[in-house]
Image (cartoon, rainbow, N blue to C red; front, side):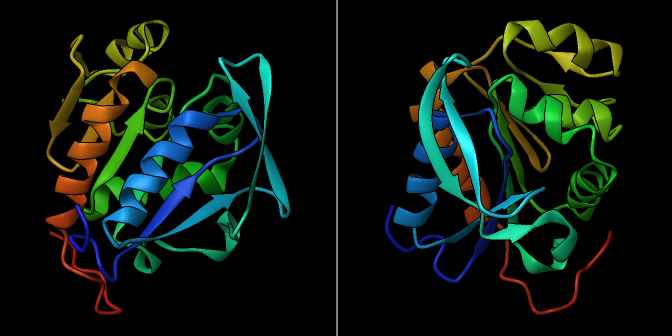
Length: 191
């Protein structure tokens, strides 16, 4: 996988309650492929990670704040899960605006487990074929998505996956999908 993402910048949007393995393993896969990743959040310092939503699993350092970034800064976006993480983030208007703009830009966005809640709040799930953790699927359906129970699903520029059990396939797919994106030239093309 080395080199496919050389020079690309990937935003990893996360907050307290992020499922550690859902941030850490994709981040490692992206960095091993040459990408630079930034943990973007709503507060400075560190975010608290969890294991199975309940067990303290250490912290991640926040590299940038959501209010200080734009879609133009990144070639791709990763939305890890954990129940608390996306629920906390989707209550922030700046996060909702960022996710919506990223999806609308056509740049790749990947999300796993509870992370697809972002697509509901950003009103970008309608007409998309998506998967997620089982408890999120009704919300996705109600938001107009076609929901499937598959290991990893790519529909246009959105890739989704169900759970940490699917991480090997998810990590492989996001590297492939992110590699299809040309590096930023400082201006964003919209189609």
